[in-house]
Length: 249
Image 1 (cartoon, rainbow, N blue to C red):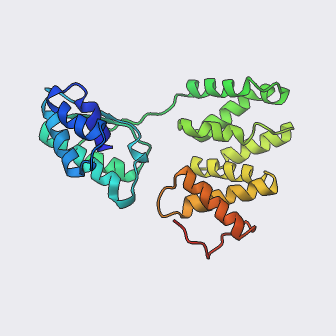
Image 2 (cartoon, rainbow, N blue to C red):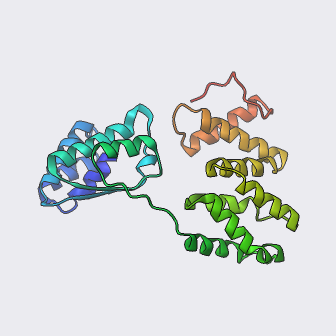
Image 3 (cartoon, rainbow, N blue to C red):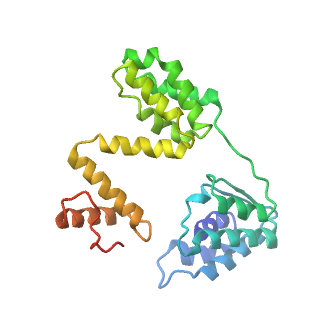
Protein backbone atom coordinates (compact mmCIF):
# COMPACT_ATOMS: atom_id res chain seq x y z
CA UNK A 1 0.00 0.00 0.00
CA UNK A 2 2.91 2.35 0.69
CA UNK A 3 4.23 1.63 -2.80
CA UNK A 4 0.82 2.51 -4.24
CA UNK A 5 0.84 5.81 -2.37
CA UNK A 6 4.32 6.49 -3.71
CA UNK A 7 3.23 5.85 -7.31
CA UNK A 8 0.34 8.30 -6.98
CA UNK A 9 2.49 10.89 -5.22
CA UNK A 10 5.32 10.82 -7.77
CA UNK A 11 3.11 11.17 -10.83
CA UNK A 12 3.55 14.94 -10.80
CA UNK A 13 7.08 15.03 -9.41
CA UNK A 14 9.84 15.09 -12.05
CA UNK A 15 12.42 15.09 -9.28
CA UNK A 16 11.51 11.54 -8.27
CA UNK A 17 10.78 10.18 -11.75
CA UNK A 18 14.14 8.34 -12.11
CA UNK A 19 13.54 6.38 -8.90
CA UNK A 20 10.01 5.57 -9.99
CA UNK A 21 11.21 4.36 -13.39
CA UNK A 22 13.89 2.20 -11.81
CA UNK A 23 11.82 0.44 -9.18
CA UNK A 24 8.17 0.67 -10.16
CA UNK A 25 7.99 0.60 -13.95
CA UNK A 26 10.89 -1.47 -15.27
CA UNK A 27 12.11 -4.93 -14.26
CA UNK A 28 14.92 -4.83 -11.73
CA UNK A 29 17.01 -7.34 -9.85
CA UNK A 30 15.23 -6.60 -6.61
CA UNK A 31 12.17 -4.91 -5.24
CA UNK A 32 12.66 -1.74 -3.20
CA UNK A 33 12.70 -2.33 0.53
CA UNK A 34 10.06 -0.91 2.84
CA UNK A 35 12.58 1.57 4.23
CA UNK A 36 13.44 2.77 0.70
CA UNK A 37 9.77 3.26 -0.08
CA UNK A 38 9.27 5.18 3.17
CA UNK A 39 12.24 7.48 2.54
CA UNK A 40 11.23 8.17 -1.04
CA UNK A 41 7.61 8.75 -0.11
CA UNK A 42 8.75 11.27 2.48
CA UNK A 43 10.88 13.03 -0.15
CA UNK A 44 7.97 13.01 -2.59
CA UNK A 45 5.66 14.56 -0.03
CA UNK A 46 8.19 17.28 0.76
CA UNK A 47 8.32 18.24 -2.93
CA UNK A 48 4.79 19.67 -2.67
CA UNK A 49 3.48 22.63 -0.72
CA UNK A 50 0.35 20.71 0.31
CA UNK A 51 -0.50 17.02 0.15
CA UNK A 52 -3.88 15.34 0.63
CA UNK A 53 -3.92 11.57 1.06
CA UNK A 54 -7.22 9.73 0.65
CA UNK A 55 -7.22 6.16 1.95
CA UNK A 56 -10.37 4.12 1.48
CA UNK A 57 -11.48 1.15 3.62
CA UNK A 58 -8.52 1.14 5.98
CA UNK A 59 -10.32 -1.49 8.07
CA UNK A 60 -9.90 -3.97 5.19
CA UNK A 61 -6.12 -3.72 5.39
CA UNK A 62 -4.50 -6.96 6.61
CA UNK A 63 -4.05 -7.19 10.37
CA UNK A 64 -1.61 -10.12 10.30
CA UNK A 65 1.95 -9.24 11.31
CA UNK A 66 0.60 -5.86 12.47
CA UNK A 67 0.52 -4.67 8.83
CA UNK A 68 -2.36 -2.27 9.38
CA UNK A 69 -0.87 -0.80 12.54
CA UNK A 70 2.51 -0.32 10.85
CA UNK A 71 0.90 1.35 7.84
CA UNK A 72 -1.12 3.72 10.02
CA UNK A 73 1.95 4.57 12.07
CA UNK A 74 3.88 5.57 8.96
CA UNK A 75 0.98 7.72 7.74
CA UNK A 76 0.82 9.42 11.13
CA UNK A 77 4.60 9.94 11.07
CA UNK A 78 4.29 11.58 7.64
CA UNK A 79 1.56 13.81 8.99
CA UNK A 80 3.70 14.84 11.95
CA UNK A 81 6.88 15.39 9.91
CA UNK A 82 5.49 16.84 6.68
CA UNK A 83 2.07 18.20 7.61
CA UNK A 84 0.11 16.10 5.12
CA UNK A 85 -3.68 16.04 5.24
CA UNK A 86 -5.22 12.58 5.63
CA UNK A 87 -8.77 11.54 4.80
CA UNK A 88 -9.60 7.90 5.47
CA UNK A 89 -12.75 5.80 5.45
CA UNK A 90 -13.33 2.73 7.57
CA UNK A 91 -16.05 0.49 8.82
CA UNK A 92 -16.45 0.65 12.57
CA UNK A 93 -13.32 -1.06 13.88
CA UNK A 94 -12.35 -0.19 17.42
CA UNK A 95 -8.56 -0.28 17.01
CA UNK A 96 -8.70 1.91 13.87
CA UNK A 97 -10.96 4.41 15.62
CA UNK A 98 -8.69 4.47 18.68
CA UNK A 99 -5.58 5.07 16.56
CA UNK A 100 -7.13 8.06 14.83
CA UNK A 101 -8.35 9.44 18.14
CA UNK A 102 -4.75 9.49 19.39
CA UNK A 103 -4.02 11.85 16.48
CA UNK A 104 -6.88 14.15 17.50
CA UNK A 105 -8.50 13.41 14.15
CA UNK A 106 -12.01 14.56 13.41
CA UNK A 107 -14.18 11.45 13.19
CA UNK A 108 -17.47 11.70 11.31
CA UNK A 109 -20.00 8.89 11.36
CA UNK A 110 -21.57 8.32 7.95
CA UNK A 111 -24.95 6.64 7.91
CA UNK A 112 -27.38 5.92 5.11
CA UNK A 113 -30.52 8.05 5.17
CA UNK A 114 -33.86 6.27 5.43
CA UNK A 115 -34.95 7.80 2.11
CA UNK A 116 -31.93 6.28 0.36
CA UNK A 117 -32.60 2.89 1.95
CA UNK A 118 -36.23 3.03 0.85
CA UNK A 119 -35.18 3.86 -2.70
CA UNK A 120 -32.78 0.91 -2.75
CA UNK A 121 -35.41 -1.50 -1.43
CA UNK A 122 -37.95 -0.33 -3.98
CA UNK A 123 -35.41 -0.99 -6.73
CA UNK A 124 -34.93 -4.49 -5.31
CA UNK A 125 -38.66 -5.20 -5.19
CA UNK A 126 -39.46 -3.74 -8.63
CA UNK A 127 -38.05 -6.62 -10.78
CA UNK A 128 -40.16 -9.16 -8.89
CA UNK A 129 -43.52 -9.59 -10.58
CA UNK A 130 -44.98 -10.92 -7.38
CA UNK A 131 -48.06 -9.49 -5.78
CA UNK A 132 -46.94 -10.55 -2.30
CA UNK A 133 -43.83 -8.36 -2.26
CA UNK A 134 -45.49 -5.37 -3.89
CA UNK A 135 -48.51 -5.42 -1.57
CA UNK A 136 -46.26 -5.61 1.49
CA UNK A 137 -43.56 -3.23 0.26
CA UNK A 138 -44.31 -0.69 3.00
CA UNK A 139 -43.95 -3.31 5.74
CA UNK A 140 -40.77 -4.68 4.16
CA UNK A 141 -39.23 -1.22 3.98
CA UNK A 142 -40.15 -0.32 7.56
CA UNK A 143 -38.88 -3.55 9.11
CA UNK A 144 -35.60 -3.83 7.20
CA UNK A 145 -34.74 -0.14 7.65
CA UNK A 146 -35.38 -0.50 11.37
CA UNK A 147 -32.98 -3.44 11.62
CA UNK A 148 -30.10 -2.11 9.49
CA UNK A 149 -30.08 1.15 11.46
CA UNK A 150 -28.33 3.13 8.74
CA UNK A 151 -25.77 0.43 7.82
CA UNK A 152 -26.25 0.14 4.08
CA UNK A 153 -24.13 -3.01 3.38
CA UNK A 154 -26.59 -5.22 5.26
CA UNK A 155 -29.76 -4.18 3.49
CA UNK A 156 -29.26 -6.47 0.49
CA UNK A 157 -28.52 -9.48 2.72
CA UNK A 158 -31.67 -8.97 4.74
CA UNK A 159 -33.84 -8.51 1.67
CA UNK A 160 -32.47 -11.77 0.23
CA UNK A 161 -33.68 -13.55 3.35
CA UNK A 162 -37.32 -12.66 2.66
CA UNK A 163 -37.55 -12.21 -1.12
CA UNK A 164 -38.67 -15.78 -1.88
CA UNK A 165 -41.35 -16.16 0.78
CA UNK A 166 -44.54 -17.56 -0.73
CA UNK A 167 -47.28 -16.51 1.68
CA UNK A 168 -48.16 -13.44 3.77
CA UNK A 169 -47.71 -15.50 6.93
CA UNK A 170 -44.19 -16.61 5.94
CA UNK A 171 -43.22 -13.08 4.94
CA UNK A 172 -44.48 -11.48 8.14
CA UNK A 173 -42.89 -14.17 10.30
CA UNK A 174 -39.54 -13.66 8.54
CA UNK A 175 -39.76 -9.89 9.03
CA UNK A 176 -40.58 -10.34 12.70
CA UNK A 177 -37.55 -12.59 13.07
CA UNK A 178 -35.41 -9.82 11.58
CA UNK A 179 -36.76 -7.08 13.80
CA UNK A 180 -36.44 -9.30 16.86
CA UNK A 181 -32.65 -9.33 16.59
CA UNK A 182 -30.82 -6.59 18.45
CA UNK A 183 -27.59 -6.96 16.49
CA UNK A 184 -27.75 -6.39 12.74
CA UNK A 185 -24.56 -8.43 12.28
CA UNK A 186 -26.19 -11.43 13.91
CA UNK A 187 -29.28 -10.94 11.78
CA UNK A 188 -27.25 -10.80 8.57
CA UNK A 189 -25.12 -13.82 9.42
CA UNK A 190 -28.17 -15.82 10.49
CA UNK A 191 -29.76 -14.97 7.15
CA UNK A 192 -26.70 -16.27 5.30
CA UNK A 193 -26.63 -19.51 7.29
CA UNK A 194 -30.35 -20.06 6.71
CA UNK A 195 -29.83 -19.76 2.95
CA UNK A 196 -26.87 -22.14 3.05
CA UNK A 197 -28.91 -24.73 4.93
CA UNK A 198 -31.77 -24.37 2.46
CA UNK A 199 -29.55 -25.35 -0.48
CA UNK A 200 -29.24 -28.78 -2.04
CA UNK A 201 -27.17 -31.11 0.18
CA UNK A 202 -24.03 -30.99 -1.97
CA UNK A 203 -24.19 -27.21 -2.40
CA UNK A 204 -24.73 -26.78 1.33
CA UNK A 205 -21.79 -29.07 2.08
CA UNK A 206 -19.55 -27.10 -0.28
CA UNK A 207 -20.57 -23.84 1.39
CA UNK A 208 -19.61 -25.23 4.80
CA UNK A 209 -16.22 -26.33 3.48
CA UNK A 210 -15.61 -22.83 2.09
CA UNK A 211 -16.47 -21.31 5.48
CA UNK A 212 -14.17 -23.77 7.26
CA UNK A 213 -11.18 -22.78 5.16
CA UNK A 214 -11.89 -19.05 5.21
CA UNK A 215 -12.42 -18.94 8.98
CA UNK A 216 -9.67 -21.36 10.05
CA UNK A 217 -6.90 -20.30 7.67
CA UNK A 218 -4.00 -18.57 9.39
CA UNK A 219 -3.96 -15.90 6.68
CA UNK A 220 -6.32 -14.66 3.94
CA UNK A 221 -6.47 -17.15 1.06
CA UNK A 222 -6.30 -16.33 -2.62
CA UNK A 223 -9.14 -17.73 -4.72
CA UNK A 224 -6.82 -20.26 -6.36
CA UNK A 225 -5.60 -21.47 -2.95
CA UNK A 226 -9.18 -21.89 -1.78
CA UNK A 227 -10.01 -23.86 -4.92
CA UNK A 228 -7.07 -26.19 -4.29
CA UNK A 229 -8.11 -26.61 -0.65
CA UNK A 230 -11.64 -27.57 -1.66
CA UNK A 231 -10.34 -30.16 -4.11
CA UNK A 232 -8.15 -31.67 -1.38
CA UNK A 233 -10.92 -31.80 1.21
CA UNK A 234 -13.36 -33.36 -1.26
CA UNK A 235 -10.91 -36.21 -1.82
CA UNK A 236 -10.22 -36.75 1.88
CA UNK A 237 -13.73 -36.65 3.28
CA UNK A 238 -17.28 -36.46 2.03
CA UNK A 239 -18.53 -35.48 5.49
CA UNK A 240 -19.66 -31.88 6.17
CA UNK A 241 -17.85 -31.89 9.53
CA UNK A 242 -14.40 -30.42 9.88
CA UNK A 243 -11.65 -32.99 9.31
CA UNK A 244 -9.27 -32.23 12.18
CA UNK A 245 -6.42 -34.11 10.48
CA UNK A 246 -6.22 -31.50 7.73
CA UNK A 247 -3.38 -29.03 7.89
CA UNK A 248 -4.73 -25.51 7.53
CA UNK A 249 -2.67 -23.01 5.54
